[in-house]
Length: 221
Image (tube, rainbow, N blue to C red; front, side):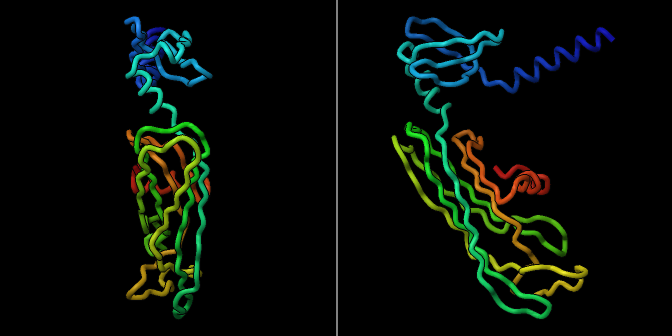
């Protein structure tokens, strides 16, 4: 039992180490420290060494490469807004359709510039009432190049999507149409990712939508 506990403890340490991203910091005097970046507080950079000790280093003592690393590590903050427009579409026997368009507004709320490109992804999700599975109706992508100091805003819009308004009764009764798939609009997901593909901002039509979609289709990004 003692041996088992020791192995479990070792496994836990290895997993934690794998999750943390340690960086080799080189001071202007040639001193080298391996630590995980935590945050920037005033004119100091806070990092955490493997032994758990906190290191505070003035920005002025960082090397040029470390300055660049910190700039990329501090992601900008965004205010994200999603709007869904729906218009009545064609009337069909046992139900009608609606034309859905998703519009998103991206507003940079932090002041500092960001020197690397960011990608904005808009996913529109539908629920296929025949297969009872979620599907991606549309995916739009926009790249934000090197955001400057201060505010910034942009918009992104989906294509027009023809969906059924509702589904009542057994699946066999869902009206089929040669031009439209039997899909009900379920919502949209807005993701902003950095150069490494890491999501730094997320907005969902409702909580858990991204998790539901990725359970079916795998990671969206």
